[in-house]
Image (tube, rainbow, N blue to C red):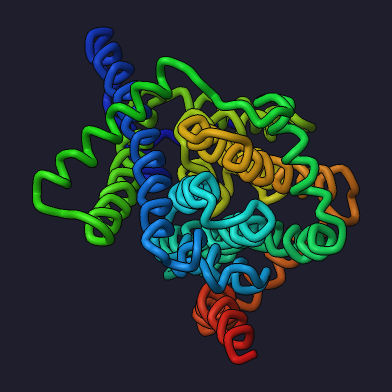
Length: 392
């Protein structure tokens, strides 16, 4: 069944297809944006090292002093991602922090898992567009929350396993060493040299403004975070323009496919646009209108979950050593393990589908369930988890 066209009102209209010259300009701008993104990661990493060098925790910045507890790390990952509305920004920041040495790979694992949970709130917000139409809202809310329940179940299963065996972080470390060399070699390349030169240039400009010591490090950190936000935002916009129309055709193919094809389509689209939110948010109005069933949307969601790990892998390219690459592989292995655990086994595959459908039925009866769900899962649970840990 073909997807309804934008003119029929089910989806936002795509921008007009640009000319060949326009496409060439967009590809060039994309390269510049990716370079800017890597500079931002390097700037954040070095700024954190500078703050640590100023005596904040003897080599471990006090900004991350509470993240040694896994529940605090999980809560931080959820809350930060909910606030910035981008798991890509969260994971890129975590890569920079780990690369700086201020946070260990082991302590960062729960934060990565929390980012996976936090990013799903975007889908829920998109589903509210159908709030006034009961049947449509029920389908939209189920499509939005199936991603939530999959990630919640994956964290509930894999976090205890990781804490008891360290199987994910150890496997990620092994993979990173295979790529980087077991001797802990550095990733020397012309691109990396250019990134370092650009970072030093930005630092020099900040010094010319009269900044020094902690104020210089803080300004560099804030600039790095700002550049990360801006570069990821425009990378997403640029890729969406370049892929205008192709996303719709890919979704059409997914409707006529089964097995791993929808997963691959979801993963490829997400890697291309560097945003799982775009891929999964497109599915919500499709399910709401009845064009796509929840069962057919679910594997595309899982593919998007896998594809979003590409951002952390790209961010790790700006870092030396194996720690940053290790935490990027943690993100990949966690999402891959969740997919392999829940999708092939019918009983487990039905679990997030049944939970999403059940919650959507309750939300259809009373809209208070929507408020309770969003506030409870994305704010109260991580907040109280953080509060309980700090009370001890």
